Image: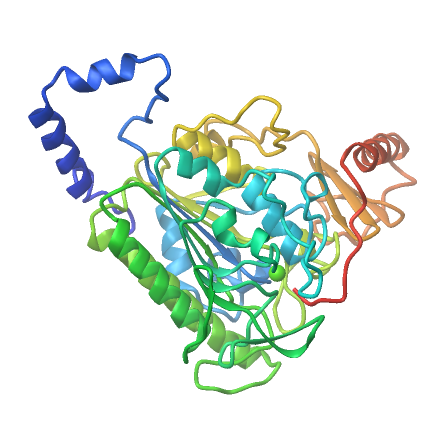
Amino acid sequence: MGICDNNDRFGRREAIKRIGSFVAGAAAAPMLSRMPWANADPPGGKPNVIVMVADDLGYGDVGCFGSPDISTPNLDAMAAQGVRFAQSYVAVSVCSPARASILTGKYPRRTSMPDLAVSNDPESGLSPSDVTLAEVLKKEGYATGAFGKWHLGYAPKFRPRKQGFDEFYGYLSGWADYETHSYSGSQGSNEKWMFKNDVQFDEPGYMTDLLAREARSFIDRHQSHPFFLYLPWNAPHGPHVAPDGTRAETRAVYQAIMSNFDYNIGQVLQKLTDYSIANNTFVIFISDNGADGVGSNYPLTGTKRTVYEGGVRTPFIAKWPAQITAGRVSQEPIISMDIFNTVAKACGAKIPAGAGVDGKDILNVMKGTASSPHEYLFFNFGNKYAVRRGKWKLIENTGLYDLDANPYETIDLRSSQPTINQELQYKLTQFKEDYGRRGGYSVDAG
Ligand SMILES: [Ca+2]
C-alpha cells in the first residue's frame, strides 16, 4: 500500500459516471443539479464511507500513537495517508453510550442510550426515534452495512436493521468470545447473540477474521455504488484469546490479538485499492473508549469507566485522499460525535434544524484549515463528570488540570486557579441540568 494512494483519481466509478453522463446527454446532469429540491452532490461525487470502531483499544496500543510494544503497520499507513488526531475524545468511557453518540452525533445523555444495553431488559436500547448516521446516508441513496458489535439493544425493535442498516453480521451483546462467540450477560454465562441480518445463527471462526471477511464481501458487492460501512470491531475487548487459541489476560495475548486486528484492517482497506476507489473513500478509525486490564493508555492516567484522559481520549485516524492532505498530525481537541456531522455533510446530506445534534463538521479541522469548533467538551461516567476548555480540564470533585503542561492529570490547580475552576464548574453544572437524565450503569459488561 503506497503512502498516498492517488492512482485511482479517475478510477472505475469515475469512468462509469463520465461515460454514463456522456451517453445520457450532456444537458441532463446540469438540469438535475438546478432542481431546487435536489441536494448538491459533493465535488467528485458522493464518497464511500467506512467508520471503524475498535472496542476498548487504548491510546497506548497503536504504533503511530506511540505504543512502545505494539506494532500496527496498517493503522500507521492509514495515518500516513491522512490525519491522526492526538487529542480526540469520546463523551462516555463505556460501550453502549459511546456507540449511541457516534451513530447519532449527540451527547449520550441526550439519546435514549445513556447507559449500557442489557440483555434481559426488552426496553433497553437505542430508540428507533433516535436518528442514526445510517438512516441519514440511506436517504442519500447509500448502501449501508454494519458488521460487528451492536450493543445498542437486544429486542427486535432495537436491532441494526431498524436503525438504517440494510445488512448486519455480528453480535448484539457487549462482547462475544473470539472463538466460542458466547457472552456473559444479565441472563447467564453462555448467552449467544450472533445474528446475520435478522436471523440468529453461528458458525466456527475467529471473530475478528469473520468480521473482516464480511466487511470485504460488503465492499465486493457495493464497490460500484456509494456505500456506508460501519465496522464496530470486536477487538481488542476481553476476554482475551489469541488467534492460536491461547487464552490468558496477558500483554502477550493482547499483542497477538492486535497483530491479527491490524492485519484484518489492512485486508479491508486493501479492497479500496483493488477496486480503485480509495481516493474518494472517507475512512475513519476510532476506539469507543480507553483500555483497561492488559490494554494500555500510555502515557495517560486512568482507564475505561473513568473520565481521566486514559478513559476518554482515544486514537482517531481519518483518511480521504481526495480531500485530506496525507501525513498530518492534529492537536485540535475533537470528539467522536463529530463523525456524524462531518460524514453527513461530506455525503451531501442535510441535518434537519432542531435535530439537537451536538457534534460539529470537522472536515476543515481534518484538512488543517480550521481549529476545533468546540469551546467546551464534556465527559461523564456514572456520577463522574469532567469538562475541557482549551488546555484546562476540570474533573468534578477531583482536580483542575493544565493538559498542556500536565497531560497526566497529576497536579491539581483548583486552589491556584480559582477563576478557571469556578467557570468550568459552572459549565459542568449547566451541562448536567441541560443534557437529559443522569446515566446509571448496569452490571452487564460492555
Ligand atoms: Ca468498549
